[in-house]
Image 1: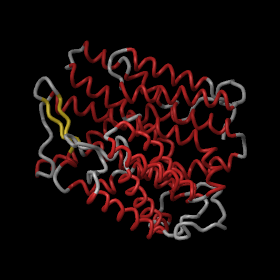
Image 2 (image 1 turned 60 degrees about the horizontal axis):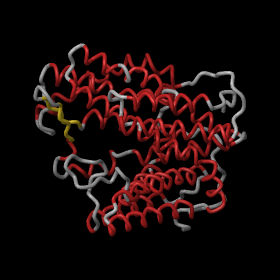
Image 3 (image 1 turned 135 degrees about the vertical axis):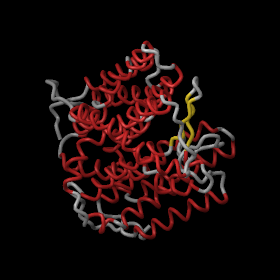
Image 4 (image 1 turned 135 degrees about the horizontal axis):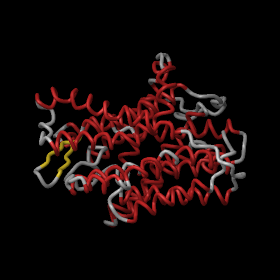
Length: 413
């Protein structure tokens, strides 16, 4: 335990450049990956979506490119720093975090609930529209799970202050038990408990970092990646940390012990590189990208579907074979087109990153937890059903809006 933990350290009290850069870099890699790996083809009726990472041997890239562990780690550190700096009540802090997390989703829903119907009346084929509508909502799984971590932050920080490294170790133990039961009983559904165990464990590591108690990052990296290699080699886990078409199981949905091991490796590696990262001149990047990260995350997939609709569906230009000369030569053009489409979306919707201050009263545990339940339920609904035609997206969006109305805008942190 002393390998990773050192007690008497002063907690970080101000913004941490390393954490800011990690969050921005993580989101940038998410977008880059989502824009790069689709293998798209349209036969005049159906749009099929493959994954370039399904190429044999390429899965090893996902041990670095699957950056959601780093996003949860950085979020844990940021939440710990923010909560301790606030010096206010936990319900007020939670209310503010909920608003910043959920408010930018409303413009996305306002566009995407009617948008498929409008395009359908203009003659756009039904199946590609459904694919785009569903996948746009499925990306909200991250916000739904991250909301759980945010809501649990006051409690988990108390456990962290009392037990230190034992808290993430207990969560990791829960992940071990969950996978053992899952693979010995055949009850795959029980694996979804690891949504809590795995991601809260990684989030909890962010608390340790915020208190400057991750003191052996090199050993953590070797132990994490080494454990992942053993689990993949001798266990039931696939090598890819991203779900692939045709695979019997995924390390992401639900997350597995192998994903947790890779997460430990990534956290150790990133923390090991911290001295070099903090020496980079990133002030302008952080100042520009920080207030736009949610907008990029929410709108980069609509940009992908817009370009896909024109290039693949309308013009019939399918994705070349991944790694081929045509794929390599065409990628800069593809990426440039996506950036051109995302840019006006970024300029138009980034203003919604800052929620408006409305004249409501103070937050209480009752209102804040009810708001979290409504927002979480709405995000989960959009994750499951997407924005495909029907009542589910409307009800889910109303739940998010209702949750936001219960928060306390005066409690600004």
